Length: 348
Image (tube, rainbow, N blue to C red; front, side):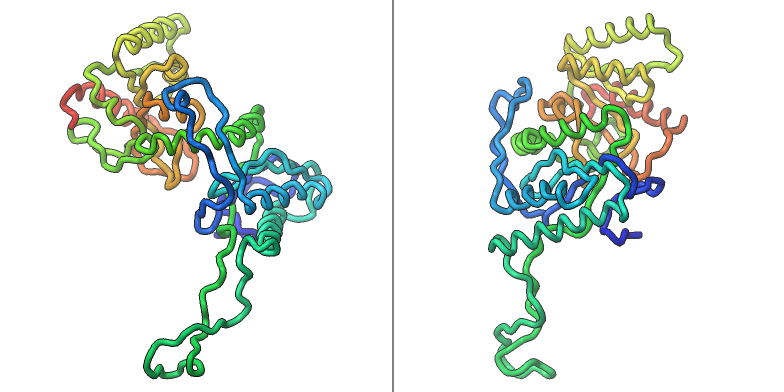
């Protein structure tokens, strides 16, 4: 059920009037690239160099949106508008609610959207909304029940700035605020990399990854063609010494031409995957959840994907609700990893 404040995502157990940090995302209508222009990714960045800043030039609309966002702090006592970025077709901002609110935080976001659109219209950056019927030319010939000659009632309304609703993420865990602030600052670079490597960020539907196995995939599809692959399967009961030996063995193989394939289920499997990504080695990950409609990888996965070092396979359909992985699902994911490893050069 939709919220009266237009939220698209909600943690029903959370009190949205209580003090907290909120990461807010609002999309332009209908995803128009009107808030800013992102420069091209630096050439060295595309091939895997250290992160470099990417230019972001705000449009008059984007500047107005940021002005309204900053005014939130003075408009609402006990609320601080923190880091934000106006991307071409969406806005990210962190809202710090320091004191308990008299109303749901969604009312602040709703007011921000309304005021920013109003200010854009007052500056002539958006056409004024239509108030009532507007006359336009009538079609030739008589029309039963038509408006007076030469007029037709009901022209389309002027475009709005924002889509209905917004997305929110509640920052509750230690370190999450810094991570989200870094994400906002890094957003222009990430967009530039996606535009420079569109094929690596496009979900391939029904990709044949092994005989009689097809699933959605995202990343460097050519990793499937590597003749040597090694499955990463590590028991939760493995000793630290045995895990270190296994990690060294697999990383050595990857350094010498193998592609590691892992469902990243157990702590040991996740540790080896992180080590492979840190070392710039190729990795195929079999995901426990599918790709959401607007999916894009995050964190280390994003940079590995941009540099052609990652392929993600999604044998299960996407589920929005977070669930605990079952033993049967673990067996299924390991089965997919084994099939990919054993497929060799037979994959079409």
